[in-house]
Each structure stands twice: as structure tokens, then as C-alpha cells.
Length: 176
Ligand code: IMP
Ligand code: MG
Image (cartoon, rainbow, N blue to C red; front, side):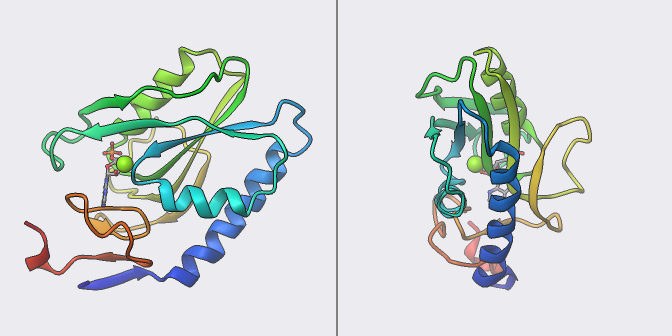
């Protein structure tokens, strides 16, 4: 790694705070909450977040979205796995690793709206404010980061480094 931006301990602390904030918002909601993680980058964040959120009526429905190539045309996306569960009339929280150009979240938000959920909110661990479009609604944000390509804690470069426990920037030679 060229530089570690966020250490595992820091991430853990922030995820705990987010879980509390989100938990409070949906507490007492009789129909519970359906979490929709966007595969695959969100899996580590998801796993940590939901275990900090003791909610008796939580469900998970998956979607998988890919960006075309490695940042080929920013914002261009494709659905690889369509929603795996029924969200009609349910409260939904979309969970993703990072908000970059916003193409991914825009696609998922509009895809899920078509299923007529009771509500849709969005949580991301990271946001690059330099790139994120201002009209895209995101309700929970872990950290704002510089406009750098980061890996670790679920985020990959060409499928690798998702298991790195911290979030960092790769050394120049490690990319392509
Ligand atoms: P967007 O559609 O441009 O907002 O990009 C969102 C998706 O691209 C995320 O779900 C990530 O999978 C991926 N992505 C964007 N920036 C990074 C990064 O810095 N590192 C790793 N993956 C990224
Ligand atoms: Mg992703």
C-alpha cells in the first residue's frame, strides 16, 4: 500500500456510530427493514454494520451492479444480479461501499423505486465529494475521502485486495 487512509480501528468506530444512527431511525418500525447491499464491494461493510444493528426484523435482498470495465466510462453501469427479494411496501436501506460518480447508486435507487417500497434510504461507507453529484440523495455517509482510487475493506482493484483490513491507496506499480 502506498498510503493507508483509514485504519481498521477507525472504520470499526465509524461503522458502530452509523449502526446506532440507522438503528434508531428504524427502531419501533413494525415491518422492520430490508437491507439491499450492492455486491460485491459492500460485503465487508454490510457484515460489520448489520451485526452492530440488533434489529429483530431485518431482511437482506441482494443486487449486483458492475461498472463497465475499470472506470472505462464513469457512470455507465450494468445490472448483473437483479433484486433477490420482495421489497414491495417495505422500508429499504441500500448499502454500498463508495459513492464515486453516482452511476451505481442512481441505477439501484431507480431500480428499487419501481418495486414500490415504503421508503428508500441509502448508506455508503465512503464518498468522494469531488465527484459525487449533488442531486443524488444519500442518507448516511461514513467518511468523505479525497478523489483517489482506494482498496481494502471490501473495495477492490481488478477483483483484488477486498480482504485488506484497512482502506488505502495502492502503490503505483500495483495497478495494472
Ligand atoms: P460510481 O457508480 O461511479 O459511484 O462508482 C461506484 C462503484 O465503483 C462502487 O460501488 C465501487 O465498486 C466502484 N468504485 C468507485 N470508486 C472506487 C475506488 O476508489 N476503489 C474501488 N472501487 C471503486
Ligand atoms: Mg461496487
